[in-house]
Amino acid sequence: MKQKILLIATLCLLAGCSTHRNPDKALAQTILSDSSLTRVDSMAHSLLQKGFNAGSGYSQVWVRDMNTFVETALQVVDPKEIRGAILVFFALQQPDNEIVDGYVLNKDFNWNDPNQYRSKADTAHVGFKNTVETDQETSLIQTVAKYVKVTGDTSILSENIAGKTVLERMGLAVAYLMKERYSKKYGLLWGAMTADWGDVQPHTDDVVDIDSTTTPAIDIYDNAMFIIALNDLAGMTKDPSQQQQWKNLSSSVAENARKYLWDAQNQKFIPHIYLDKSPIPADFDESKVFYHGGTAVAIKAALLSKAEIEASNKHMLEDVRLSGAPSIGLTLYPVYPDSFFHGGMAKPYIYQNGGDWTWFGARMIQQLVANGFVKEAYAEIRPMIDRVIKNKGFYEWYGVDGKPEGSANFKGSAGTLAKAIVMLQQWAEKHA
Image (cartoon, rainbow, N blue to C red; front, side):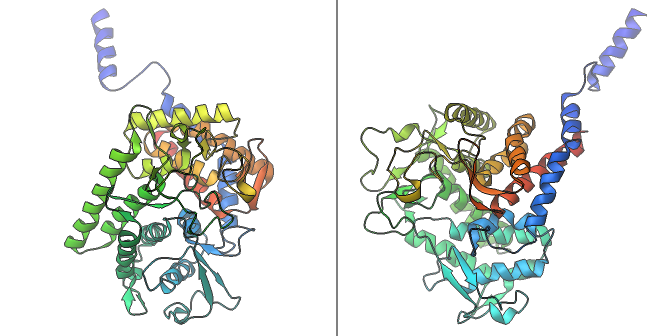
């Protein structure tokens, strides 16, 4: 009898049986039974039916925002309209091949009329660009890749805009970055010094445009976005030589990002490499600043190992504890000192200098799920879910006191959070 019991136990062990409850199954059931996730996902879908502007405080269509909500929007909006919205960016591509931040449309614009975006002479829209940033070109390439992946509509790549195809124009956008924003010394992109992924520079009232006060700097966010875009571009082209070109450049940027920006001893990315004199006050140690958003994007760019992802997440949670912020959407910690930035960002914990942004925090949730940290992801998404329900909508950012700030109906927040929810639920369905 004892031998029979031992045999059964051994066979059960080999088959993966356990007398204890399967923790993955228990977590999966908890996620699937959480009606608040479904409620917030539904709220996000409802919001994204209401046009492509970034939020109630923004009348413009922004490419960095569209990149984060296009997948969810495609579930509730006619893909032809989204296709048209994307193509406007290519119609507005500048003579030097840079991509604008966004555009303003007149009220008579028709997304489904190709004649309104195929001509560069089109007066239906006016473009603009915050030149301190270096993520517009990479955001557009990523947006096109997501559109193609969701819809299967590869014809957008051969769409002719003012004599060049979309695929050609994306290649030209990369060429612009390599000519105007590439440091040969480091093999990385540069932009103006800003707070992590932000588009506000210090020491000037002209906060969004490169000027005589600008400090050129290299950071992880811009380069992680570049790596992702290059990989997307390699996946969209069928020309083997071009594929290899984009893959080689992606590998080179990734290698240099690790070489120059990753601080292995402290398990974090350094905030900046300055190409000129540092703008940081002598009594502030910027090397201690941890960039939450840039780190999340770097994980998506496959720059960190699983152990480094775990360490980064723990660092974020400790930053949340020390700062008193509501969630890991906290942009950075410690924050830059009082009056380092000007205007509305002069005080710490305001806007991009220590505000809490679901727009980026939910990207970290996505990466936790993608890399197997589902228990952590579910626990860390809860504050983001709860505040959407409490405030009856999606806000641009939150103060450390949890008060909603900035634009209401912020679609980037809705898009990234909805995707994180879907990823959690899909995992749960497989493990229930």
